[in-house]
Image 1 (cartoon, one colour):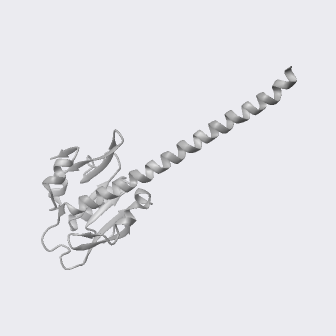
Image 2 (cartoon, one colour; image 1 turned 180 degrees about the horizontal axis):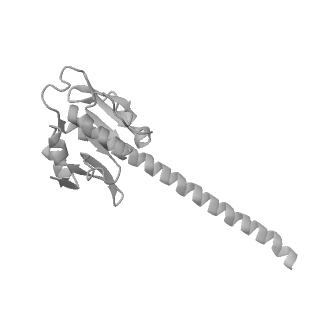
Image 3 (cartoon, helix red, strand yellow; image 1 turned 60 degrees about the horizontal axis):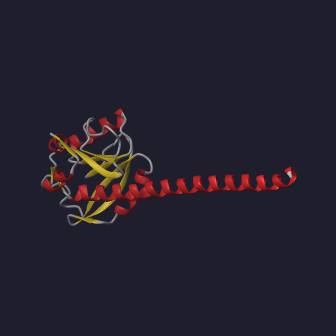
Amino acid sequence: MMSRLRPRLFLLRGLVVAAVTLAVLVAGAARANDSIEEARVKAAFVLNFIKFTSWPDGQGEATPTLTLCVIGGYALAGQLNALAGRNVQGRQVRLQPLEAQGGDAQCDAVFATMTDAVTLRSLQQLTGRRAALTISDQPGFVAQGGMIELKIVDGRVRFVVNLAAARAANLMLSSQLLQLADRVVQ
């Protein structure tokens, strides 16, 4: 009797292991798809932030491009690349990778994937020289002087605006944008 049950137990054990493995693989793939979709939504938010921002008179009017600089690795899983060439306020979006030290870049907007002290100091220097909208999805970015912080709340992309930082850089954010914000810091 016991010898008959062994093959069945072996088969049952194999099926359970296969089912658990399949469940883990499916869950991992779903999370990967969620993160790609989340990155795609955040990239769309970045484009809309740019659309609803006004730069000081004279900045960039002579150039046909609006430069979105990216600090850090593969920002938003590469989804920001889809913004290149899009038309915003009569100008084409151009992506430019930027070192954390910033250098002398001519950025109209900056997306930072890292917000360490060096990067934050660089962003402050950059916005001191040129009006540049600063955006990040790193927690605490607005509290550290950034302008717009993307975050996930209850599975949805939300954002916080530091209006004082935007005004200090001579940027005008649309009232429509401010109404959609989760919170506006004065």
